[in-house]
Image (tube, rainbow, N blue to C red):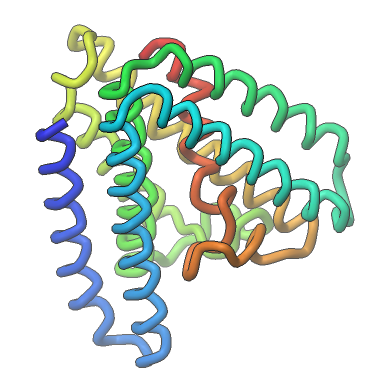
Length: 234
């Protein structure tokens, strides 16, 4: 857990420097919004890590809250869907939420912390590199703000984080490589899926419960997807 904390603090320090440099080119209100989002994310990440350190009962409670809160937000979104099938969306969410709960129930606290940090690194660095270098839209009809450069930066950072924290999981070299790549791709999949539902529903955020981040699904979509796809291996 100490290695995980060292990585998160280092990552936020690097991100703060990059934001400070990159923020000089944007308007003051935009810069202020980015710093609020950055600060809230710092609190969210380390709150989740504190929960994992507290043990399995706390982890299971947190995951249950995330899945239930996500379902409430999804209910509001699907009521406003202008295209697509709400039934299909709910089927996918039930599968993802159910598998995530099962996998989190069996995972060790260290494995949960490992997975969450890799996901957080993806989320954080995809945003920062997108702000710095983003030019080419990745999927403009699904998520207009995502760029090829941002996603590439996030995937690369997530993979490197997974390799740096390889001691947190019991896996050989091939397993660590597979975990890094699989987690990074799962993050992107969950992110795009949640964004598609928002576009189909004509909303920007699932809710405004987290300042600068939107709703619970806006913040934890990648985490649930990663737990579903690679959680069984962990």
